[in-house]
Figure 1 (cartoon, rainbow, N blue to C red):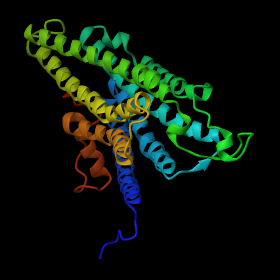
Figure 2: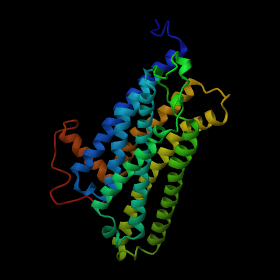
Figure 3: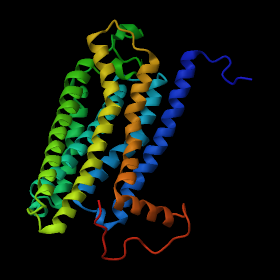
Figure 4: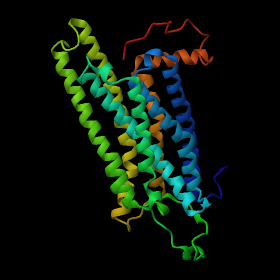
Length: 330
């Protein structure tokens, strides 16, 4: 006996979308809370790079706790006032922009780490890193709230039977946010431009590391110590570049759909395709903790320690990070 009898195909798509979004929301929140906890627990993770990684984790927690529930509610056809719907839509943009600016800050930090290794600790301090995180989020709010300043679509009030425009509307992202804004400002200006900069930075990072490894890392210290330093930097740079690549792959489909909607208004966009694009953009928030856990050794060790403390694994063992001792492997 089938439990889907009487459910139309469109409703089946809706139910599948909501179920998958719920699972991703839980995974995003849990995984990224562990990321923040790892930075708090392990002193060796309290450097500037992991300060930016923690900022990215906060954005991903917001995706699971706020963005996904809002996306689900909007997909159900919530009726609300125009500016309420526009504000909710802008909130999604703010959090997304926070993620990409955190990724850009991480790339700049790693670039300085390998470009000026002897002066890095003087130039990049914890205080300056916190200021940079604050600026990232300030810029995220400014760019994300641009539609509130006028670059939006105002529905015709006559369509809702109210000439004053005070009648509730069915809240849809595409019904209040202009596709011109999404393509020209958000995609090209706030996504593509930072990704191009990050690609150039990581390309230069890998070039510098390879050159200095070939010279036995004489710029930092002599012999094997210098080689180990740059090998550690190379491993960490590869992991963080993978995070950027995953972000690009997960967000590109949704932006391609936006471009289709703008440049080919007559082209049909299947509901399943739209849901898939939205879902992939949210999946990205759940993937980042997996990258850290599988590719960054000291992060993985910290997660194991946290799990043992919480009783999720076998009984607690002596701390992996004794007082005053840090793990230097990347």
